[in-house]
Image 1 (cartoon, one colour):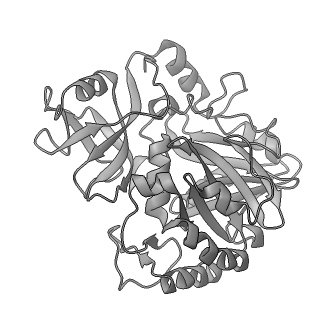
Image 2 (tube, rainbow, N blue to C red; image 1 turned 90 degrees about the horizontal axis):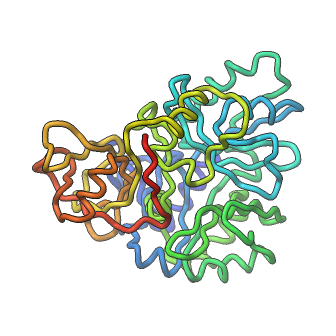
Length: 371
């Protein structure tokens, strides 16, 4: 915690704004871990496209060590852990026995440790739940956020990110969901956005402080909001406290993103997830929208004007778009997605009289899977 406080104090000296308890930027709030929102103004999509660096402070990290760490996780998560190589990065879900997602992870490993990245706010409960099922397995969980090599996370993307990173990494990960290790830290390439690579750089606080000024002279600087906006435009969902137990993985496109392996063995909810893939009936997917309402938040409901009595969907993730509104990933009935895409104002936020939902193009194709 002290390391994160020192890092956030450094960022505040650079002009960062903390987040108040209601989620709104608050320049008077005390500096604490997971507090940085932005640097005075939310980055726009155009700025993300050109190039940005974001101080990511709201993500936690669970580390697992031990001879049976991989086999233990393999029996808990939706994706293959046993065959995860040190060069790979994967998405994975953690479900209830009913197949509803409790958490979504970005997952990678090195020679000794498997890492699971998730929102810091839900990390303690998820880590405790996983620990309950370790039993006699030779696997040990710990909070890896404070490990020296993982003290700080920077997110980078856009046209000029590669050139900016080349000063610290002679070789960059060649494809999405791959990684490289270097003396400067761990560099994860995650899903591309706007046709350009995006990266997470995990490093020591000292290296991050040294890199911050050179990076911000080349790239627009942002905080958690900027990183989440880039995730949203990459079509990558993240389960937060507001949406736990709301979705089976396919509802948030998780299998389209490689986050579900249907050939692996059992895990909590596996039967429901498999049945949803092959025998489901409700048609639901997650898509990208923009809403001119700054109050939009994860867990908020959407309504089709043609059927105003019951919600047709839910906000999965939302972030300020720099234009006064919010861009979001929303989980909806496919019929409502089709209706909203073809008729302006056909879907609204909060109620059938709420702010209009503008549908944007997704970075990948949504198939019409029955769910």
